[in-house]
Amino acid sequence: MTLPLAISLSLPQVASAADTEEYRWNLKDLYASDLEFDKDVAKLQTQIKEISGCSGHLGDSLARFKTCMDLNADMLKRYARIASYASQTHDQDTGATAGLDLNQRSDILGSQLEEATSFARPEILKMGEKKVKAYLAKDKTLSIYAHGLEDILRSASHTLDKKGEELIATFGMATNTASAVYSTLSNSDMPWPKVKLSDGQEVVIDQSAYTKYRSSSNRQDRKLIFDAFWGKWKEFERSYGVTFYEMLKKDAVYAKVRNYPDSLTQALDGNKLPRAVYDTLIEQTQANLPTLHRYFSLRAKMLGIKDMGYHDMYPALVSSNLKFSIAEGNQLMLASVKPLGEDYVKAMTKATTERWIDVYPRPKKRSGAYMNGAAYDVHPYLLMNFNDDYESVSTLAHEWGHAMHSYLSNKTQAFVTADYPTFTAEIASTTNEVFLLDHMLKIAKSDDERLLYLGSALENLRGTFFRQAMFADFERTVHAKVDKGESVTGEALTKIYGDILKRYHGDKDGVMKIDDLYATEWAFIPHFYNRFYVFQYATSIAAGSMFADEILKGKPGAKDKYLHILKAGGSAYPYELVKSAGVDMATAAPYQAVFVRMNKIMDEIEAIQKKRQ
Image (tube, rainbow, N blue to C red):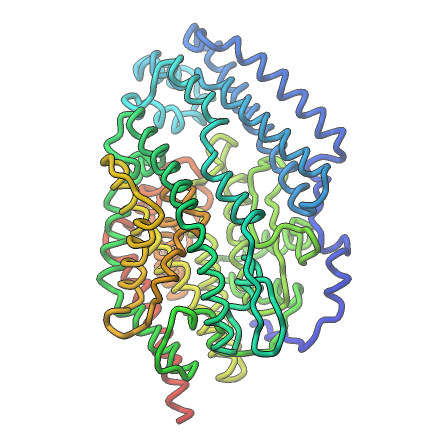
């Protein structure tokens, strides 16, 4: 039976609900107290000393090899739980010194762990494939390590000797300066401008205010906010250029030290992703920019704007006062995932009642949303800042998609193969978003509701696919320059980004006007300090769209193939895992599925608009 759409116009209980235990995650599932946390930290510190005895002796015997491998796995599992408790204690109140202290202690411990285990890769390579495989054949309990060992052996030409690996591990504490400077400067030290809005309100346009007011219904206010915000970034263009260039140089050096031809090849090789995946994504996106431009033209028409500008990107296509409580959001989400089968729905239903999630915003609570599934023996944790609108419901479905991925992987896989890479991580979340949209459209009571859901999905495709592909295009360009020994200044980065930004938004074709000032946006994007990361959002939504479409159409075997990806965790290389389920991310097909879906949504919107003419 389809659950009814549950909507309320106001939720006065939310203000107090933020502090209600029912809506807070239960970190006692990780550790009953800080004292228990301290005990586990002490245990890990003892193990770090213990594993030093494995250094130089990993291949002495099968028994020694197994003991060291098991100890290493136990250490990593323990650290994942420690780090989860520390980071989430901090995230629930970023102003509390206790949480910050736990987080810093966890970071230091992580560096000590990395340094202590840095001997393993070069020693496994020294043992050689023949000896490693002989050990695996003699002791079947070692099979859980087979994939990880294969990954190490294939990287022989990129792994240094023991001394070299120890040196790189030691430098790990000293090579994050660029990211740290960016974070400090952008979050704490920049003197943000103040503007006076059309209603007389004076607002300091920092990052949170920019995010809030850029969607203003007043177009003059939006332009004022964009000019002030990006003008401030322009003032710091030189400084951010130096910072980002330092990171680009670091990546180029590490690629060279590890015998890779360039930084992109090294980044992709970590998960054995073919270069064709990255290049095909960008090629297909560039070839299908008319679909994106169609959306911009539709947006302009719906907003009643003739001269679309970059500052017109964020107002909602459809205004709505629909409100959804967290209970209603859960209800809608659970109804939407029924195509994934009874077992999936039953597990998710139970999980939503067991305080895995911190639901509402509070002062000093970390902003945004995420899922952490690293605590293998416990359960995934979700952080939300639920504010009762449809976007919150969509985000809820997204994060629970991640949580169910971790739940199924942890349930099926051993710890060492449970963790999955980003390349498959976002598939689970974006697939659930497609299911939610399909369900919402089926139960919508009016065209206004349909427009709300369709508009939200359209903007999600713009932001998660096209925008991330544009970022990937920029990253490939600037990394390639530095890999070849060229320098780039802040001004040069703005020129490169501006050319790409204008091409993607149809500036030359009159689709959308991009002011040169706004090309400093590259300096604002924190993801660029995590090299070649964001492209996986685009590939994931492409794969997710294809899987969801096949499952909703009832294609035989589609559901089981999809669930197999979730249960497989990190037991296979992600590209090969997704390909075995019938989606080859190095071909045009999955990207074409995104464009088809986006055009179909626009067709539906235009059909509703036509009825109203």
